[in-house]
Length: 317
Image (cartoon, rainbow, N blue to C red; front, side, top):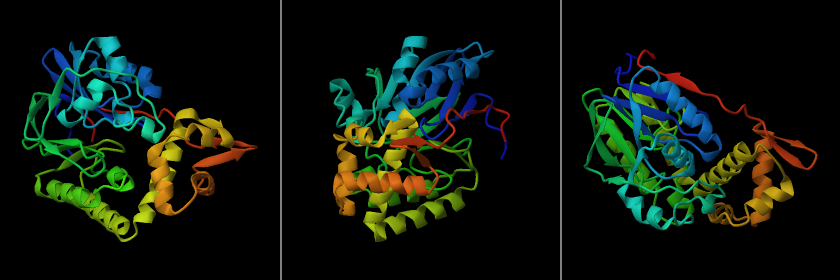
């Protein structure tokens, strides 16, 4: 792949915190998405590093959507830099009321420090980022209120969790009894119609073989459509793994108590056809078998190496 424009930085994170895309516009900078609250201090330091020597100050945060791993650093960046926050317009009411269930934080057993927004983006708007114009597109599926950003001039796509190199995010509406598979299919078709040579995803590395990524994503989506319980099982394991990435170690009985009010996890268990406690144990057992967690006595311990970060500046290939 050719280098990114000199006005852009791509910061690749781990799977607890989303990636960041930094755009320089003269003496001001914007960051897209901010990671999870646990890593908020690291996010601040990464932004200081990305802006070092540029003469730019962080003026704005833009969120593609408001899952906790994409907006958990918002408050810390406001406190550190005094920046403004722009969110999807469809999420403005929930942020204004700080409804943690409708924002999905409580419903998934996760957390996010409270923040306020200063502006909102709608599909059809144009986002100015890194001296470039980006078309704002709706990207329902993973999140019904998510946005993606496309730069026609540079053939770049900021895809959030709508497309990764090897898939996409959980289709949460389907877990909650709403339509999501059809919407995800439409988003993949949209991406296929756009002129895109490089994708800057919400998780994982930047990639260029968009057609291959779309083919993999479509195959996974069709497998989920054919067996929605497979999707629910996957979702439950992902949410348990996320919790362990956050806490790193927890007594298994405490895990069940911590997840007691996580409505989305309960809904996934119901789709599988399991009692909730039994479903949580099944998910933990499966993750241990896969080597993603391990047991030490009565404790579950995360097996992943935390804190991996890769800075992808203009010279990245």
